[in-house]
Image 1 (cartoon, rainbow, N blue to C red):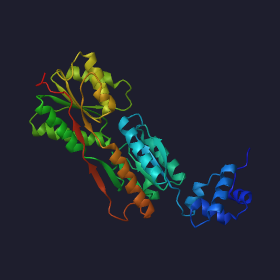
Image 2 (image 1 turned 60 degrees about the vertical axis):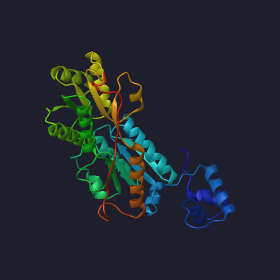
Image 3 (image 1 turned 90 degrees about the vertical axis):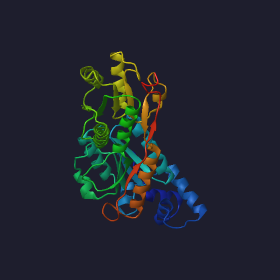
Image 4 (image 1 turned 30 degrees about the horizontal axis):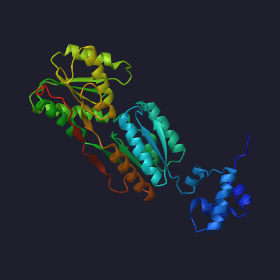
Length: 336
C-alpha cells in the first residue's frame, strides 16, 4: 500500500521547514512569493492532501459544511443545493452533500458521519418536524434549517411563509370560479406540508367551503393510484392545491386516467415551479419559491455563526420567511 504523504515529506522535498510549509497551507503568516511557489509545487508533485480533521482539532476549522436535504430528486432541493454550493465555493468553503431520502434513520446516520468528519457547520432540511436529533443537541455545532423546521432545534431558519402562500392559492382558485377545492400533500410530519395544509384550511374556512384533504405516505411508489381513487370518490372536487411538484405530477397522471381536462374539469395550483411546468399540456399555476435566495441567505447565516464561534443561544436567532410568487398560467374555468 502506498504510504500517505505527510507535511514532513513536503518540507523535505522543497527544502523548507515544516513550519514554513504549514504557514503556506494555512495562510497563517506572510511567506515570500518564491518560497510559496516552491512549497505549492512540492505539494502538487507529491499529491499531498491536508488532514482536515487535524486542522479542526487544532481549532483552525475545516472550511467544510454539511448539507442534508430530504430528497435530492425534487427540483426545489436541486436548485437550493446549487445556490449553497456556488456561494460556499466563492467563500472558500467545501460542502458535503447528503440525501436522507425522507428517512429519519438515514438523517441521523448522516448527521453522525458529518460530525465525525469535523464539519464547521450544518445546513439541514429535516425529515420530521417532531423528531429529536440528540447528536446535534449535544455537539452544539452551528446549524441553519432550511425549508422545514424541527421544533426541538433552536436555530436560524430560512424558508417561506407556507401558510400565507397556500391561503393565496385557495383565494386564487375561488376567484377563478372553483368551489370544491382539495389539498393533497405527503405526510403531516413534514413541516412544509403541515403548514401548507393549515393555510389551505384557513382559506377554505374563511370562504365557507368544504375541505377535501388527502395525505400520502412517502413509502408508496404508485401514489398516482391513490390520488385517482380519491378524486373518483370525491367527485365534487373541481380543483386541487398540490403540496409540491411530485404531488402535482401525480395529479396530472390521475387527471389523464380519469379523462379530466385541465383547467376546465380540474383546476390545479402547485407549490414549486419546475421548468417543465410551462411546457406541460395542462397549464399549471405555480407557487414559485426563491430557491437561490434561500440558499445564499442560509449559507451567509451559517458562515457568520462559524466565524463568530457561535452555535445556538449565543446571539439572537433569526427566522426568515421569504416571499413567494404566484405564477398564474391559463387556469380559469371562467375564461374557457
